[in-house]
Length: 426
Image (cartoon, rainbow, N blue to C red; front, side, top):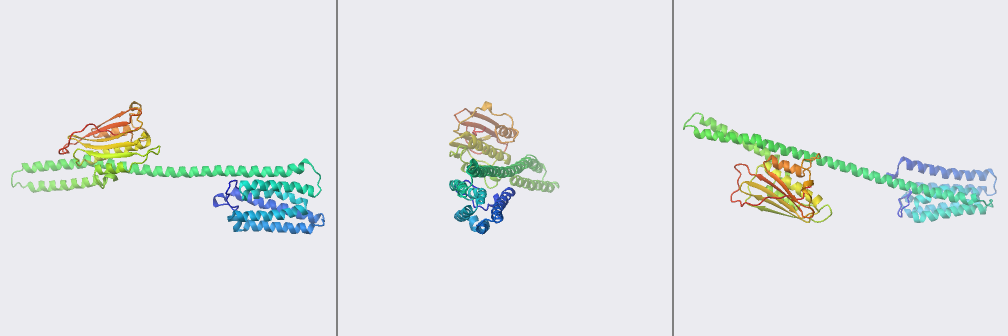
């Protein structure tokens, strides 16, 4: 049953082959067969002069109906379905002329017309069928009464209401099914994203722990052994053992550093922090309102190799800031600057978005564990750094994060620059 301008064929698609639809189709077949059999039986039982002709027309109409329900052409083509309905209509009109009992088969014909034809054709066809049924009363000299008109018209109205109601329920059911499918797909994507985020977070944690404990301890052991080696007198028998121990510590320190690099974020595996930030700027998505976001990236000062925890912290902070700029700020332009100074390294991301009131932003990390302001502040604090926010409604957003360089990591010739900002974090 279809009320659209381009209906599906009568033999439903797999999505429509439901137990309810199958039961309705079988009931329609049984109803038409029963009414045709009733017309033939009454013509024979009453000894009507045209009883043989009635039986012949009933058999012909039943054959046409069976051929149409089994024909693949009717199932595939709307034109073939219309031809089949026309043939059924001709047989039915002949039955109406021969027997007044033929008018009762109008009811299943209503459903066939509404099911096979588009709405603009099916409603006129139903109206003509009802008119023919009413005319059969006059043709066979039946007494004229309100029931002669109300019966066929009421049957037609009931058929139309049933078909339109079923179509509305079906469309609503399909809409909900699609929503459920989309919800299940979204849940699967979220679960996969959470697993990936959890895996990356654990890799970062392990890299940080290995760097802060094992690697630092091996580095200290190596320095102490080198000092002891220098303090030994020439020709001391302990010198080879100290050299061997220092070499083993150096090898294990190199292995620990390889572990740290292997556990670093994928964005840092094949390049420097500056390269990862440049790729991040180039891959910025359009804003939540569909506007284009132009992101520029620059490096200030002399770049130097940073410890993995520092690179991870700066990269994750930039990713979170830029993601929030895309989602919330409605900005058209953003600038990311990585600055190397004498004793610190800073990151700067400034946007021209709608801004917000920093006083209303949460000061503690949310339950969702997202990388908002609280999470970035905690990450900076864990490395001895600071993070501050400058923003106002309609004036863009700037968040400053600065990390002090660990001892032994000092850029050569770095020009001091001002505080750094990362923007649009809500």
